[in-house]
Image 1 (cartoon, rainbow, N blue to C red):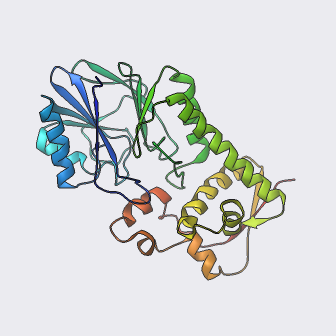
Image 2: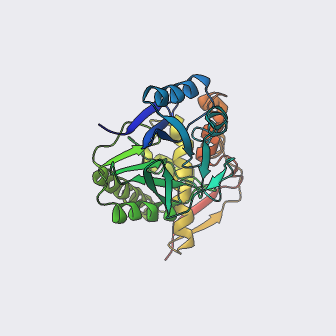
Image 3: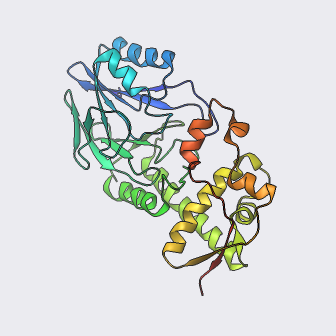
Length: 306
C-alpha cells in the first residue's frame, strides 16, 4: 500500500484544473509530510488534518514546491494548527521556518526525500523525490494532464527545459509523478519525455511561422494556436514570449518595436483584464501564473536572424 495520499483542494479553475493537489506522506514514526498545502480554504485544511489523523499520523513537516497562490498560502495556517515546520526554497517569499538544502534531503520520521532545485516555472521551485515510492512530486513543473505555462518574468523557458532534462537523466528509476494538478501519472519516464518533446515541437512551430515572415506575438498566437479558443490567447501569448526571449538572447531571432498603438484585439491578447476572463476569485492565480505584473506596453515584430 502506498504511503502517499492525494488530498485535492476545492479550487478548480482554468489554471488549476480540478484543483490543487496536496500530498500527505506517511514518513514513519507517526509523522506526516504535507507537500503543497494549497490555498487557504478551511475545509481543505480540515481535510489535510483529518487525513493524517485517520492514518494515525501527526503533521510535522510542510514542504512548499513554489510560492504561487494556489500552492503555498495554506502553509502558515496549517503550521499554526499542527506545529509543523514549513520548508521552502531559499529564494522563496513564502513565509517559512527552514530553507531546503538544494540537492540535499528533506528528513522527517524515517523518510528522506531528495530535494531538486527546479527553476523554470518559477525561480524558487523545487521537485521532491521519494526513493521508497520511486515517486516525483513535481508541483507545477509537470502536471497530471496538459502542459505547464512558462511566463516571464517569473519563469523562463531554457531553465525550464534544463529542469525537465535533469529529471529525465537523474530519475530514470522514477515510476510515478505526483503533480500539482491533475491525476497521478503512472509512467514517469513517458510523461517527462512527452513534456520535453512538447517544448521542442512548440519551438519548431514558432520558428516555422517566423520563416514565413516577420510577426507580432498576437499574429503568432493565431498562426500557431488558431482562433478557436480566444479565452486562452493571453496564456498562449505569454508562453510564446518565453520562447522569443530565449531565442532573441541566443541571437536566433531579432525584435523591433512597431511605431503604432496596439489594436484593441492586440491589447486584449497581450494585456487582458484577467478578472473578466476568470472572475475575481481566480484572477490572482492567473496573474501569478501568467506574469501579469509584466505589462506589455509596446508591440514588437519578430523575425528570424539572417
